[in-house]
Image (cartoon, rainbow, N blue to C red; front, top):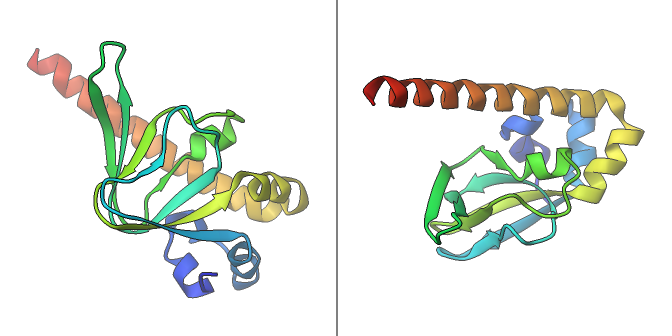
Length: 152
C-alpha cells in the first residue's frame, strides 16, 4: 500500500487532503511491469485508472491494416485508462505497454465507482483534475493538427 506522501505526488491526487489520501491509499494496487510487457491490451476488460509512479508506458493502437500507431508515451506522474473508466467502457480503447521497467498504481474501477457514490466531494476534486488533463491534451492535439495542416 503506497503512503500518502507518495500518492500526493501523483497529479490525480494532488488536490486531496491527508484524510482523503488515506482512504485512497487503501484502494490502490501497486503493479510492476518489465520492459516490453503489456499492461493491458485494447481487447482487455477495463480494470481501472493507472498512475505511472516510475518508468515509461506507450499507449498505442493497431490500425486496420496492421500498423502500430503510438498515441502517447507517458512517464512519471501521468495517468492512463481513465477514459475507459469514466465512459463506463467494458474494454480499453488502446494498448498500454511498459517500454522500460515500470511501476504503476492502479485505482480499481469498482473502487472508483463506489467512491463516486460515497464521497462526492473527493470525487469532484479527482474528476476536476481529469477534466484539466483532458483539456490540456485536447489543446495539445489541436496545436499538433494545426501545425500539420499548415505544413501540408
